[in-house]
Image (cartoon, rainbow, N blue to C red):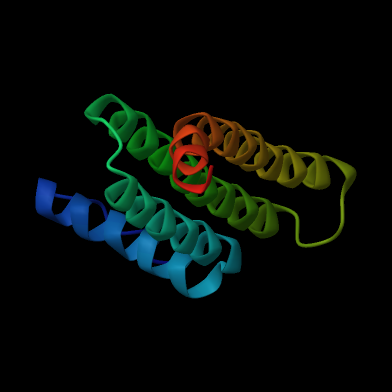
Length: 125
């Protein structure tokens, strides 16, 4: 079996990372959902003219959720590789990685409500 390719340069590292993102985009429905929501939030941010600090929070939280979703995909792949048969510890690893995404997503929703609700309240009240 041939060993996996190793990055010899920054550009090769970048290409490998982008290949991972492409794979996750093709194979992970939840990642596509997170990206769709991120685009909607970005549009809302432009329309509602959120501040630079609020943009920093929004962009950081989007990156956190998407980054954790990518990490969750990696954990699931490694667990499936090492433990193709059902195993209680494999379930713990997969469920915990998914839980990390959930915690970040719920925290992001809370921050989004704090940022966007006052502006929406002004528009609709």
